[in-house]
Image (cartoon, rainbow, N blue to C red; front, side):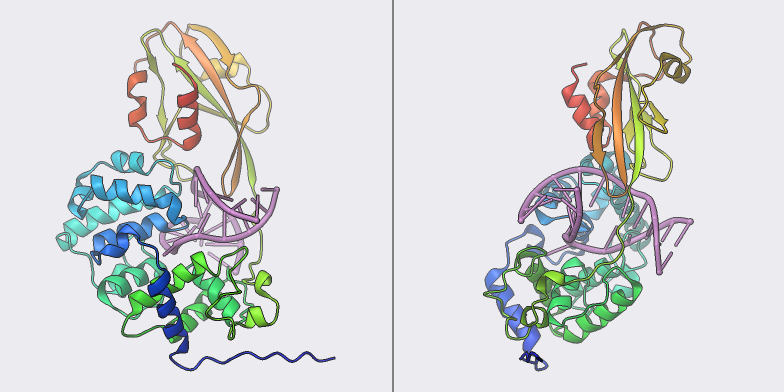
Length: 355
DNA sequence: AAGACGGGGGA
DNA sequence: TCCCCAGTCTT
């Protein structure tokens, strides 16, 4: 038996009007919505990449207060920027943020480019962020495609192209562009994202009162929970970290900066011994790290490795307390270590361990 | 085209 | 547990 399904077709302006009317009634009051200052909008967009508003909000407030203008940000040390970013993750965003602030000050006298094409040339600004800034600050009709847009459009229009493909990026950008309100693109873009974030949510979307109920292909074919489609699951690498926490006679410890590419680049940590497996360290391995003669004692801080899960890596971490009589030459005063940007797992240890 | 890159929150 | 988040860059 063939099932017959009725879906109302959008007329040209329908989608945009329904959406923007909904937005006017339902938008949250957020600090970056009070301005079209490109610096503030840029900052908010970088912070919100792959980050929930609830998580990013306090960081935005901190950054705007500490660095009210692009000049203030450009003047700061990278370490200061990373410290303020600590805990937010994806630290390349902070490094690129700082780089671009300096670039804008040096080459554009502190004035951001006023169009999509030039914005996209800046480090850390991709298609999404360039479209967001250009539309919100300069009314340039560039549609944004973020996770919300993928979800809303895939459902409403019943698009089954896996969203983590190059083809989907083009397909959804074209569709979003065709729906875009040409006279108020910034409003439209924000409305579509807000709608995805609060109504057309990943889980338990609020379909019963949805403005697109009569039009939505997914809703009318029972496929809401199946869309959007995403292929391939990433594989996670296990790594085994042993951190050596030196406690010296003169209240100093050792820190090192992670300078290679990879996780936590340019953040600090205790001296690290990485192993291939979960085996316990022996004292010889620890002594090899320091060219020292006098280790008083070595104790294992946590018998059970701390499980620290990142997107692509599952870290198993042990902390070793190394007491020594010697005075480390390049030691960091215990009282000063909170000035350095460190990964969350290191910060948690510092707070648990009473030096 | 695929992989790397954080950390937290919700179900 | 698993999924996803106002993505971008590198390989």
